[in-house]
Image (cartoon, rainbow, N blue to C red):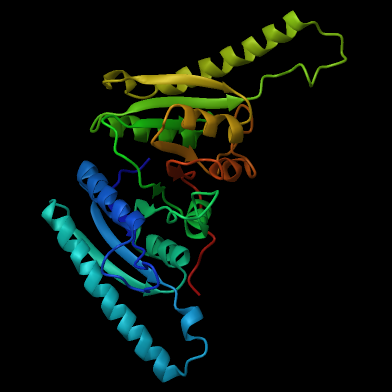
Length: 316
């Protein structure tokens, strides 16, 4: 996987009923702080990027009034973005800013493609929404953005973060694991390498006359095979140099159920996962598995795609 040299920070300037607020909402403020920290860790440059969708506010306006609103909103946004540049500079991070008008997820992806950014970092949806942590903008980035997307949840910072790397044994999950292991060489992290597979064969083989002992042995053999695959994947990294090493877990159950449960039980701070893996030992993350999982995850998420992924988003 390529190194992280350039990070786009998606800045949501809306707050309460204001289109552009000088005081950032909590989620965006957290994303900005995390982006500066990541940039320092990788010695990367930041681009603070604000996309404001005015379509609903301008459809009934005449062109002259529409142009006037666009200019006022853009000028206000540029002034706020300048304060973020100064905030990054105070911490030794080089940055720039840009303001665009249009749907945020689409404008962010177009900016990534245009300037070859290596990562997008955004905040999660504001508190007050029920159920899913990730709104439409973040989900569209997960689905269609060509570079890794880091969606940051506001949370208490632990002394040592707990990270889950969800593996499907594919090339993209090896890239993810290498990335997280390399990051842990700079900043201590407790890493869990996990794979979830349903080994409950009793229902599938019920009525075939296979005894319980044989079924149990089959399940244990599957678990052992998966664990060996994970350890082989881990052996290709520098995990032995890490303060906390890497713990390997084979979870029993479907990925969309078992992995969120593991995350909640272990108070995990970040899930790193692929969203378009090719194929794996159990077909992990193919189809809608990743999206079903994300509906139940309540921590920050870092998603990756295969190196040959091409975004369907193109300029009009």
